[in-house]
Length: 152
Length: 140
Figure (cartoon, rainbow over the protein chains, first blue to last red):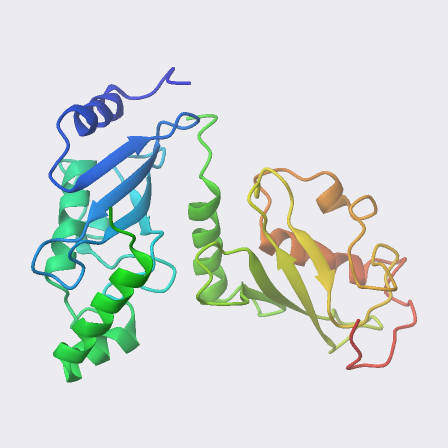
């Protein structure tokens, strides 16, 4: 299966296993090493604290010239993540650079959980909620974390 | 780069984005039945009947189901609006897998868009375009 797979992907996958960033797990699928089962722990001090969020990540054939594709599989109440788990993050779009890696992408997503950006929303209703009543909105995020992001 | 296949979910996200932008002249459209459905299984579609046929100006709605094995396996299609076509089950609107070539000879590069466009072509085909149709606005 790995025949013809760019060395870079193999290296990245390996390093993610042996030297995983804190609170992040990325396991390549057996059938497709370009596809990763990802889980990110909600950062401490955020409304997502104690949650384990599942994501899927896939490296298109043009990677690293193009960014990885990533989305949440766990429901999350966050202004930059929509109902289908799509993520609004500049480095996944126009700010992508081949110098970035899977690792940096996942760390950026983890950071996005700590600092939502309601001024560049993807989920408009959630962003509006965050802007008008941040305390109440965070309470909903916390509630959803308890409901959907099973912790260990 | 042969053999690199986009996994189901990312493939369906691409199709969804294309559908959200609108396809061509609007004679076909599709989207998720439930915008909350993270599995992206159930879709709704519409086809506007082609001109110079008994389907002219009619709006047909269909349900499209993309199962776990999509796009390796074709989607399941069903007309919701009543229609008379040789490959549509006249009792429940289901499309007969063996009578509709796009599904019968399915390739994983095919999309929901392609299926809908091919259905519309079939409606306008010489054998089908003059078939008597049920009253408009009836459903299976």
